[in-house]
Amino acid sequence: MNLDDKDLFRDAMEDVTPLKDCANVHWLKTPTPKAPRQSANEEMENFLTRGYLDIVPLSDPLEYKAEGIQQGVLDKLRLGKYPLDARLNLLRQPVENCRQMLFAFMMEARKDSLRNLLIVHGKGREDESHANIVRSYLARWLQQFEDVQAFCIAQPQHGGSGAIYVGMRKTEKARLDNRERHAKRSR
Image (cartoon, rainbow, N blue to C red):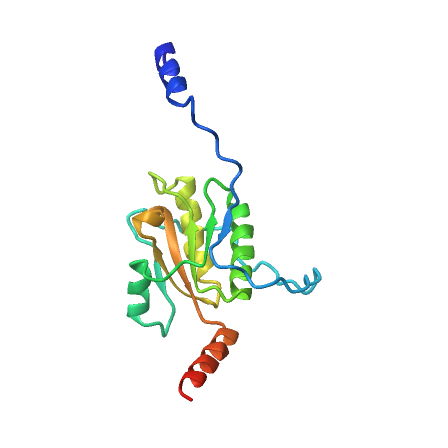
């Protein structure tokens, strides 16, 4: 960059204020009141695998549907038709941090009966890029959660191929609440 370019850039950025350190997790739905914290030995161990990874080529869209889930659920998820409950930002995070953050995020989402999540992992230009390595790990890790019923690439307004929607199974508590609500209506 020559001196003129630096001056032009400085002039263009003059009134821009840097973003504060943004939180990596954004809960769009109000979390339930916190229960007393579990002791360390009661907390679930992070079971997400480490080590060898089959890199998913950038040309392959990330998509998964658990056994027994209807195609319509995945189609609706892909179209962004479900309201988002929470978002996790994994941009430029080391892989081990992503593993830890994803596990904590998914445990909290399950505890709060959240159904529709957005995970931003970023875009890479090459298959070996950091963003694609994180993306490839996500494809593996998300399938290790029993509560994940589907995931797919997000709509452009939510990050496109640099993000994925995750559809979670309804918790038993949510099913019971639903039954009670419907029972009251039919009376």
